[in-house]
Length: 586
Image (tube, rainbow, N blue to C red; front, side, top):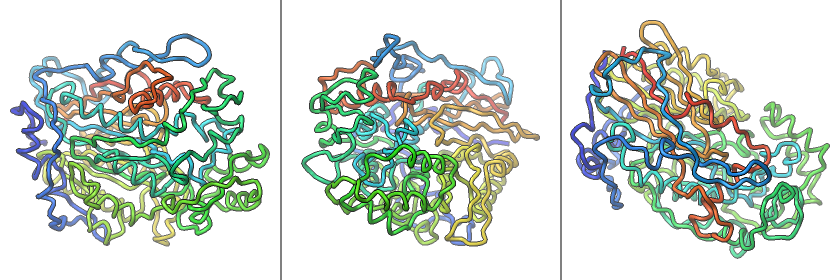
C-alpha cells in the first residue's frame, strides 16, 4: 500500500538537508500541517508566515556515511561502581540491538536493501522543576520516596545536557540519515508553573536560564530547611540521605540556582502536552484560586505529620481527590506550620491558552517551526492536538491525553477521538503512514472523568484508542511516555493493521534517557522502526568539586541513580531498549 519515498538517501550533510527542505517536509507542519477546528474536523493550517522560519544558525554536524554507535547506548551506558552505599557511576557495557519480529518476520538481506524514510528524537518527561514552588508536596516523602527526589534541583542542567547530546549526534545511528526533528511527549514541566514553562522553552530553543524563583539571591526550599527528611547538601545535618551515603557538597545549592546557558536544539522541535503541563501537581483539576494564590504567595509547607500525610498520599495514588479538596483542607489546617518564603508571581499556574501562546511566542521559536506544532487555530479552537508532516507520505499526530477533570491518568474526549479517526482515514485514503505521539500510554489511559469544559462529552480510554489505531493500515507506531519506563509493545491486528507502541523512560528518574527512532523501508514488503536510546552529554563519572554546568548535569544522573525509592526496572528489558521493530508495510 505504501508509496513512502526516501527523504534522505542522497543527503550527505544535515545542514544542507535543512536548507533544502526546511520549508516543506523537514520543518513538518510548515506547508502541510493540519489543525483541529472547533468542531473537531481536520482543516488546513492558516498561513502564519511559517514558510519564513529562520533555520538554526548553529552549525549542524555532518551526517556519517555509515552507521555509528558513539554517543549512544550502543557504545556505552552509565553503570554503577561498587555494591553498597552511595554508588558512583562510570562507563558501563553497551546495550546491544535486539531484532523483534513479533509482528512480521525479518527477512534476510534487508540491511542492503533498506531506504531511510525518516529519523527523529523523542524526549519525554523532562519534568523541568521549580524546586522552590510552594505547591509541591515534598512533605509526602515519608509516604513515598519519589514525592521528593534529591536530583530535582538539577533538572535544568540535565535537560540542557540532553540538548547538547542531540546537537552532537552525527545523524541517525543506523542509517546515517539526517535527524528531522525532536518531539517532546509531555510532562515538559513539573508544577504547571510559568517559571518552569519559560525554562523549558529556553532549554529547547536556546537562551540564558536562571533556575531560581522567589529570592533572586538565594535558595529557599526543603534542602536548606534543616529537616532530616531531605538531603541537606551544604549542611552538616545528618539527614536521612546522608545516612545512606549521600555526600556533603559545599556550594551545591548556590550552584543549583545559578544561571545556565542552553545552546538550544539545532533541529526543529515539536511539543506534546502532558498532565504535569496542564494540572497543578500533575493531578488536580486546574482553575482553583486557592492553589493559584498559594503558588505565588509567601508560605510553603515543608513537613507534615505522617498520619495526615498517609491519608493524602492514599488519595493521590488512587486519583481519589481530582479537585484537590482534601489537599486544600489539609494545607489550610497547616497554615501556622508553613515557612515564610519570598513571594513570586512567576510561579503562577499557566492555562492551556497560555501554554499555546508561549509556544507561539517568537522569543521561543529557536530553529522552528513557529508554535512547535501548535497554531493560532489551536488557540481559537481551544485544543492542544495537531498533525504535522514528517516526510513524504508520513504524517505525525500529536494528541492531548490529559483529562482536565483531574487525576494523573489520561483519556481522550469524543471530539478528539473523532478527529483522530478522520485523520487516520484520510491518511489511509492518501496512502500515507502515521506515527502518533501522546503523553500517556495505552495502559495509563483509564481516567474517564468528565471534562468540566465539555459537559456531557464522553471520555475514551486506552483500549478504545488501541482499537482505533489498529483499524487502519496507516498506523506504524504510537510513541509515548508518562510511565518513566522503557517498554515496547506489539499490537497485532488483522489485515496487516499491526503497529508498535513505543514508551520511553523519563529524563528525571534514572536511567535518564531519550530515544532516536528511524523509519526505513526494507523493500521486501516490510518496514523497520529502529530505536536507539541516548543519554545526556554529561560524563558518566562525577566530581563532587565540579559544580560547573557540565558537572551538575553529571551529578544529576548520579543522584537519580542513588535516589531512595528509585526503581531499577525503568530501563526495561533488552527488547525495550535498542531495537529493530519489524512490521508489514500493509
